Length: 268
Image (cartoon, rainbow, N blue to C red):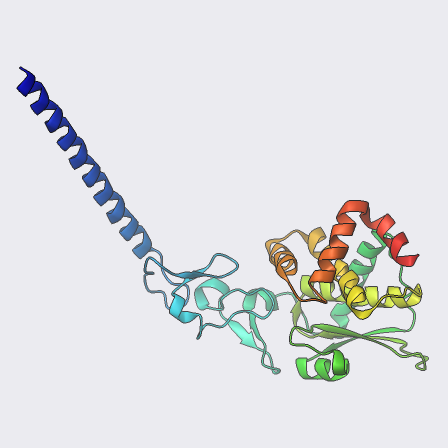
């Protein structure tokens, strides 16, 4: 009888082990079918078990990373299936069709965005005298030339203050063709430079740029779309000593004491 009991237990263990092997096989087969059913957003062929994903969750073969083209504004991989293609601006920038749908390309489109930004700044206590202010759309080459020694690879806007110009004392240059929300975020940053000058606030360059990044933070936070969330994440992950670390410092102060106290601290 003891032999029969031991034999049954052994059979039960073997049967359980056999069932586990079957389950593992089924899972592996299911995983293989699932991965092969996901198509690459670039070449439209089935993906292997390892692949790359852009900021928007679009999946593609990793070997496309070197040859793939990403949108200059939203970082999406540009393809027919994801963005319905895209465009190349005359200054070499690649933009997806989704971002060009709201692109600011004409001076007539600026006023609406300007009023939208000014109102958001007013709500947090930042009042700007907009007399003698001019906003001009530029390509990358013109923008870099205008910024001179302050130019950098990620530059999308620049403010020039000319004390001798009685017509356009404040000149803001912004990249043409940016989607509306990004244009407004860049504009908010540049307007804070003017606010600092008008209020005679003394900051070194690093601190000034860090504080002005709060303008972009304000616009993207109020917008709340996934486009803005991606840009906010990029700002949080930016380790640049000027546009990253100093922004982190001022954002931390803002979240601690709020806009009203932060503005008073800056002005004093």
